[in-house]
Image (cartoon, rainbow, N blue to C red; front, side, top):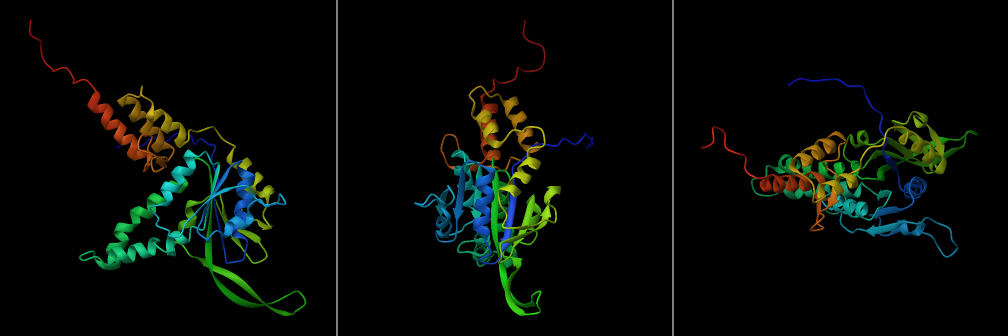
Amino acid sequence: MSFTFAPATREKAMARIALEGPSGSGKTFTALTLATALADRVALVDTERGSASKYAVGTSGGGFAFDTVQLSKYDPRDLPGILAAAARGGYGAVVVDSLSHFWMGTGGMLEMVDSLGKRSGAGGSFGGWKEARPVERAMIEALLAYPGHVIVTMRTKSEWVIEEDERGKKQVRKIGTKAEQREGLEYEFDLVGDLDQENTLVVTKSRCPELAGAVIRRPGPDMAATMLAWLQDGTAVPDVSDLLDQAADESLTYEGALALHASAEQHRLLGAAILHPVTAQPTTFSAYLTERGKALRAAQPPAAPDGPTAA
């Protein structure tokens, strides 16, 4: 196999933001503030028993305009289907509040691993993780390939510390420590920030240079505008909705399907969650394109036999 280098091309992108913090740090409020500044239509996946709806527009006119789906179990296999429905609905931003529930909540990854590991011959915890890892990977791929902005919140374990203020007076403060999520998940996001009880955001990771290391009191639309300017500084690229339209087109050829696969692979969209154009069932773009490719190949006329033809 040979490898060829080519000039790097900067492409337009959508935000991938993770907000971490203990309870009461304003994760939901901050996520909605950023999401509504980034997009006209916002969908929120509510794992907090409807608490996000307390931030919806009230009779006074204040609050955020968004649509929500409320969950009571948090099977990671369900999230790609939810994202596919949001993509079909044309939501420009999706908030998952919180992603931690898909890790440690009812029906989440940890429960799935435990259940799989207890099956006869499964090999215990090791065998459970072996089966569950592809499920988690599919969930993450669906988040990263969503054709809009994605903001997730993650709970952190709380600890209480005693500090001295500027006058030397001792005070007790709640802080967040490690996020309740898989180790290393932060590498998947463009920006990761820790929120404290005063709703101050400390950016711990940022691919956007203007926000690297920033400390922002009550993050607002200005932060979203900075992020959006950085994301839009590049060449236009197709999203999964564009590729899905091409894949479902009746004029598509087998060669065209191969080209679509190459394009989707290049832009890391093979794992994008979609609703099947015919059955409306959740699937991935890769699975649907493979299905289309097989059908198109089967419909091709048989190749002419080699060798001389009869006179």
